[in-house]
Image (cartoon, rainbow, N blue to C red; front, side):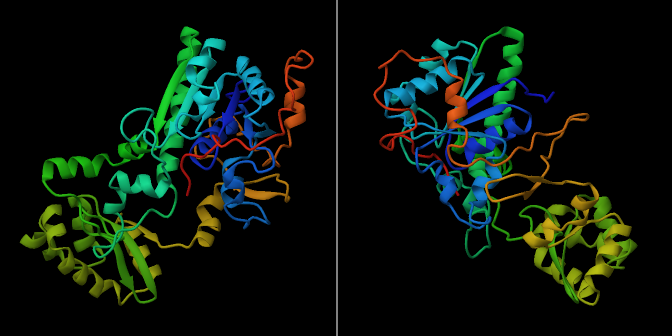
Length: 403
């Protein structure tokens, strides 16, 4: 049995943050019932068509889930969700601000029906305050937290290359849900969780917050170097670039005297005596290091660095990462099914010993509608004038967060 075998998750989710949280619950064996708009589904289905016609985002975030089309503007659609929730363990939603409440699917209404329910809302800025109703996409939250002000070169800021605000919110939703399930096992009581992208990414901003508030100035943008550690970043080689990281005085001494620089006297130079001084004189230090490494190949430099215990790395492309010898040697690749055939996927980073993650197929839109609805209690004749999976597209099913 998987860790979350027997746990049912109902998800009104779009885009990245909520699907990332629920996919990880599915990896642990939870049954995730993903509610999607009739005919269109999760917006992330249309972000691109690069995976044999499917969206790379959707493939990444939605394996092992059951896709159910429901029109939440119809009584039958809402009744179907309410019926699902009555026996569910977890409900996750990242609809537009206030949308769940307008649909009668807020935490008060659902937990009244099911007191053991763990209800998790993911929003851009939280359910209260002046930004409660403000639209929130990943780039915009990166800007609001100051993340973009730290990323890039001294000349120009840059956003992160992946949706870090969405991913942060999804991770805290995932860990919060697991904590709530653990508490419920001890108390029998459900929980209400509110996770905002602003506060999730804000937690990741801890170091620059302390640095700025107590140091007087924010860390400067430093490209691929480190704002407060030196030497740390790229060094030129005869046939490319190697990245290094020196974290302490022992490593600095090893770098200078043991192998690479072969200049033991450099350790004692006042300009470089401490990390703070090395940061202050970074340009001079980088020139000295570069004058040595530029005459060596990347293979020679990495071998010398490994021998003296200095952390180093190659700058790889995404394709080179996909072919990484470390992943291959640790057998980290698997295959999952999809409407377009078998696709490669990485194992989840955290796998319990003796457990195998659930790696089910990526679902087609509405693939499990009939199956899931057939499991619901029979409704009285005439209780709804339309089938749950058909009808007008609900304006309230608007995503919070995206790439």
